[in-house]
Length: 215
Image (cartoon, rainbow, N blue to C red; front, side, top):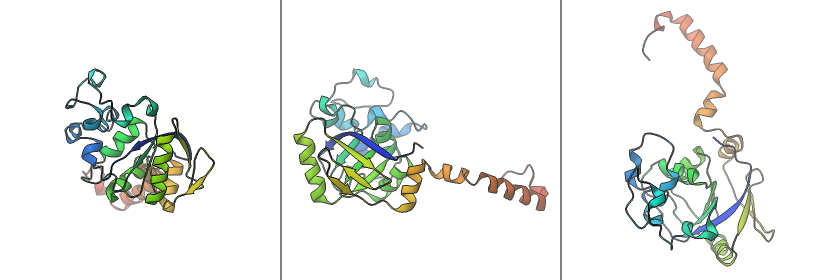
């Protein structure tokens, strides 16, 4: 997992509440057993004018010109600004996969669905909860200023606006530690690989009949 320390990026405003995971990545794209290739179908129902299916050439599909991510001023955005209850609905991990593979590193909203919130940290995304008034002010600033960028410092837990204003945010210490170091669940386990090898060696010495047995 890619480590997160300081990120400066263009902000795209998704001005709608209760964005569920089926809207983030529709159910027909969950057939894949791979963890890659979901970025082109992020927000598929909002992004394209036709119905999307796996295997389609997205470069030939008609784009919805009114959707925020299709507007030229937001091309290359890596910070998504959203409204409350972002990521509600089913628990699909494909939602943070699609957001991360599109190019987003930070999602800012007043609130998130719990499972989506947890899955985001495990996949290298930083979900930041700010109060509704602060989020509303950021929407106003983004809409008024083309090329609006934010600098997100996870170590200091501070967001800096183009005017130099700083906005503090909180991240639970263990999640912060994992993101700063790029540790997902597997990475955390592998840090203990030497201890695991010692344990396995002792276990097989004590119970040699386990050699070659299916576990």
